[in-house]
Image 1 (tube, helix red, strand yellow):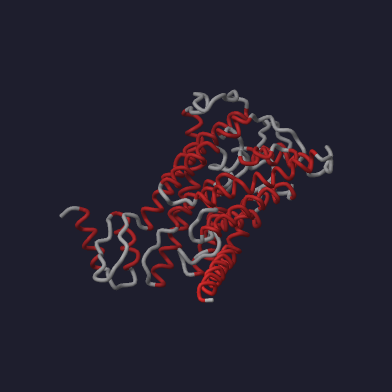
Image 2 (spheres, one colour):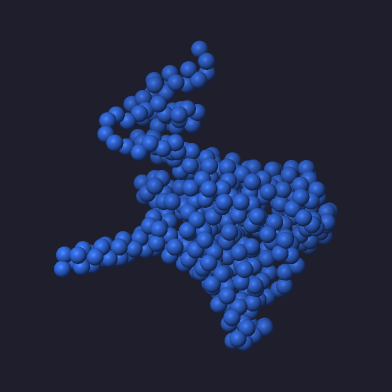
Length: 407
């Protein structure tokens, strides 16, 4: 008897027991469910939740691989062991040493994220007696990509447990949560452990340890881990080119730096009809509008050089799309089908406000110059309200047309 036949028999053995969800989860991971509907009219489609999640994961893999290379590259660049690269296909960036360093630092984050998150989901499935939900497959990949490379693993484990239990399971599980689980986890990390999620010493491997050794009076090579947004918020000029920002050769969260790969992932998700192009496009428009407003304020002389918000306000409006986590958040988290607006008109409003508020928070909150996380979470809360008024508006229009015809 083959291995697959044995797995089929084990799954059949535990049907109807408390452990059925556990074995069914492993079974459906390997096999297509053989259940079919009987009678009635129903929609037939080739996709299901698992295929949808796998498609999103495939779009995230290039960002993960690039993040591994960039983690090593930023470390060795800060030490002065390598020179800054030019061009996306530079051999100095795509080196084996950079990849090994990246794997050592990033892979444990991925493993902890999946082990803790899936263990909690399996536990709740067994307790509640329902099937294993595939919702955490994407969240488990998103979480390591939106945190600093040196984040302690125990912090990540605590945050994942909080995000899965409080952010999703208490609402009923996948499809019932009102906040994006990955951003809930990141928000917990930011408010519970702010020194590990902001500042200028957390974005490059070795920077925090290096700073601690220097504070203790030890003579070590300096490693800076400051992001572009961090520099701008403090009124400093940045030395990165537009190409560096677009390709992703900059410090930042593991998967958020390469706008190029994120844009390609956006096209893939739009083409596969998983990501909403309305939300993505309107968010970009909202960010550009807010950026143009700030540029106009500076051009009008209302904010002068040396003022608290001058540097970020005077940043070219379209540069805001290339720095920080804006692109990653808009493509992968603002488009979450569970927490986003459901109506077409609502998606336009929802996306525009995310982009608009992201840049607003980014400029006026120098202590944490990254607004996309808070903007998306805020609009997650208001998404049902937006849809409600869109639907009510449509109802009123139809009622008016009906009255006009019967008059």
